[in-house]
Image 1 (cartoon, rainbow, N blue to C red):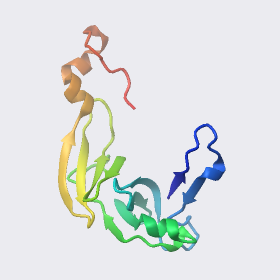
Image 2 (tube, rainbow, N blue to C red):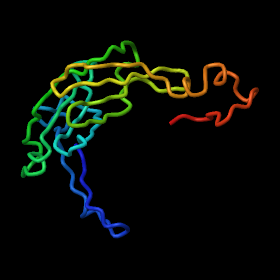
Image 3 (cartoon, rainbow, N blue to C red):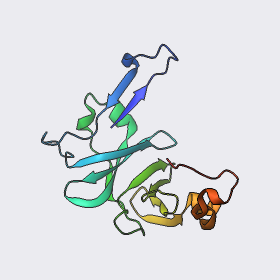
Image 4 (cartoon, rainbow, N blue to C red):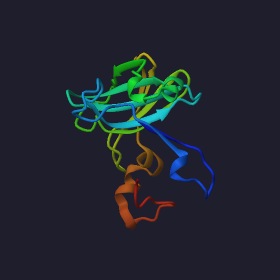
Amino acid sequence: GYCKIRWNGSDTAQTDVTTYQLIGYAGSGHVLEKFYNCTVCVSSDGTKVILFANNTEDTIKYCLIWDRAMVEAAADPLDVLPIAVWRATSTFQGAESNILQGVAADERYIYTVQGYYNPLGWVFLNQHDYEGNLIRSCRLTGPREQYGLAALMAGNQHAVSDMPTQFE
């Protein structure tokens, strides 16, 4: 799920936080209880809540999409079912392909960064439409492209401007 905070600066209190639980706990009998380990975002126009989750019955990430107004108007957000559910596909395959680094969305597309992130590794930027069709997938390496493989492998032997020492 997600939380909505009414910001009051330093006077913000727990009473200013509203939590919207969208998936039932394991064993609760909720229709979506098999989903866990979620990454959530709100579309840039504020109309959709997009959640990527693991599933106890599969090794693929799933995308679940809710109408935000319906969730926030409901007496119990758990009663609101997603308007779409689909398996997230990517051209990236392998042991690290189920690692999701982040999610963002605009009015037309959902973007994910997928894969284990390390200075020498690759990640994939995926673009899906709201029906789950993979529009585009491109391979990215941040530090490797910025500094070059030789500079990263040189360590402290060769001074490089802004040489990275840690990646988060």
